Length: 192
Length: 427
Ligand SMILES: Cc1cc2nc3c(=O)[nH]c(=O)nc-3n(C[C@H](O)[C@H](O)[C@H](O)COP(=O)(O)OP(=O)(O)OC[C@H]3O[C@@H](n4cnc5c(N)ncnc54)[C@H](O)[C@@H]3O)c2cc1C
Picture (cartoon, rainbow over the protein chains, first blue to last red):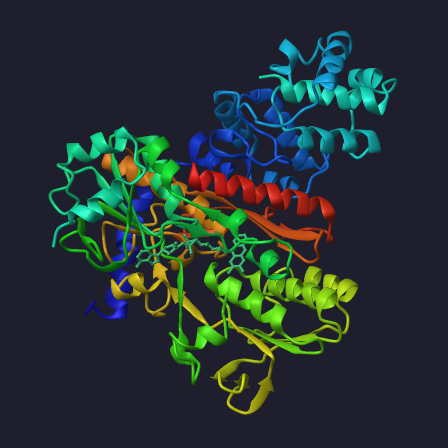
């Protein structure tokens, strides 16, 4: 480069601005791709403590992000990250991930617990966690094929009171033993 | 020079029939005409792998050639844990490229890139010339060794490791720590910011201190920091050091190492104060990877590559995009997660440009964990976007911050961070 710094700066800023003027605001894909570093490509998580977002419902994602933002749901990074986005961004990301194929996780689970969990789920949770947890009523999150460690961390937060259970969930969860709950989580993690 | 047969086969090594077919489509030659749809990506690390993969995911009619000097990549993130003795070997940090070829049809060429002709749109490599329509550079960093008297770029790191590129250097530093007698002194020298991974040197300090506490009684680590204070997560590191490593870490701010004597294991601060160590971990000041410097892509600071904040296209040479540590990404720190986000935005806008579609503004995230003890970690996160008036990447107000405290849960999340980001890069 032989151009002097001044001329260089001038030339480049003009170039850059003309490129910028054309740019459209971030799309749903642009917003969502940034999440994939932690939640996996297209929202299919490979890390046992991070939830998959693929196949999650739009409503559940929007609800989760709003609660992260307000602090209603306990978090480490998610509280701060949620503050970086608008409600419209949440909807865009929610829509994007809801359209991705459910990500089947490959994890070792206990068959006896899965069987026990299946009958418990049927009797207790199936009205909101519909289709064996593949879907959720309203903003109830889909549970199917999530990582067991992720589900266990969430349940621990519920039981300690850090995360507030919806009323209907509390009614069902309270009478259950630790073993029952563990079996339930095994069941949901096993659903493909 | 054209690609010779042996390297052509190497290029296809482990490739699926898909890649073969794609190669046949271009006559198998990377040095000839591109057909107008070829993106060459240099550097198979945190930025380059993601750019290559996402371009193919977004538009499989674009040919992508990823050029990397090694046949594998070792992650710097978590390499401090290996140095601290928390990992047996580097295999959990090592990725290969075969699945990028099998799953996405990325052509991988193992070669050293030696030069770039921006006018002719040609990349010179140790295996011949490769032509491109658009070029993405994610070469990471190289060292400004000339700023340290007595530092020989080749021989000095063989006894005084930097371990700031993961691999043999990381192993060497751990071996030196293991071989050090109890009661010994480790010296860690930190350059002036900006450098790769702002919290990295302080995580390194923590992990070395942990190692000394466990395995080398009465040893200590002297930290010579050229900066006036800890550059990132300062409060958390200070708290963690007090909690775990009182009497082991001797942190000295504003101590800039200007000279090294490999023979008697001494560093010199500002030409006057000698500090001796049994093990010296000297992290030299940094700049963009050498290939970016050679191609004339660095700005007036002569160190880092200025880019358009939407496209990551160089403001110096058109058709060349620079991402990751090598570029100036405004408020974004030089981290692996930043490189990942930048790569995706760059890929989006390359695909859109090649397809005559509108450009999309950048939105990105940084999340970077640091371990302080074997089970406790801290993190810094932020959301980043483009400020049109400033024509630069800025942090979205309110989104940037650090952990409230050291915690075990952050360490658990950190491990999944690593698993996910390395899986993204390699599958
Ligand atoms: C100790 C340490 C800890 C860190 N911890 C974290 C962390 O916890 N989280 C985080 O987000 N970041 C962390 N980082 C930072 C992270 O490693 C970098 O920001 C990231 O690697 C940058 O990506 P990149 O693509 O720019 O470069 P790299 O990932 O280094 O990739 C560059 C690639 O280009 C290749 N290359 C370069 N030149 C050529 C050439 N001429 N020809 C062929 N190939 C070439 C190299 O071989 C390399 O594979 C850490 C860094 C260090 C040193």
